Length: 127
Image (cartoon, rainbow, N blue to C red; front, top):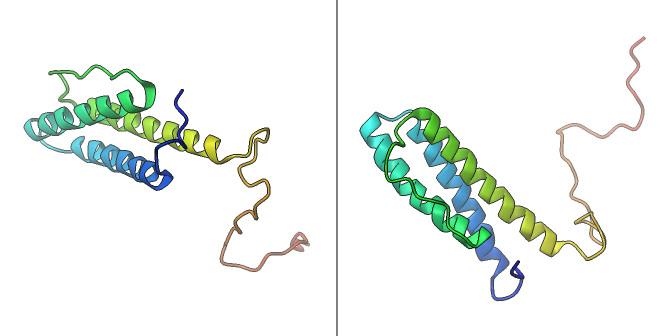
């Protein structure tokens, strides 16, 4: 597999992740559209999926010429686009992780979780 740090700006790859999630959202929206509009949008999104698949996997996914006109087809396409986005995110995290460690935050401060209430080390009194 290609070294994702070589020749590619991590910011650009992050934008590709965001684009893939946006395309998945469009596929979700297409599920509720009338058939003729859904078919058109799924045709466009299928080409985008094939390009992303070719970029990440090395071989383009087959682009279906027709038959993609149900809401289930749109939802399946959305799931596949999200899977490609998550794959790219995983590759970016693997590249960012120091070799030999499983934790991407080794050597760095972990982000604080904000829950909106002060942290308490003791369990609440329920008596």
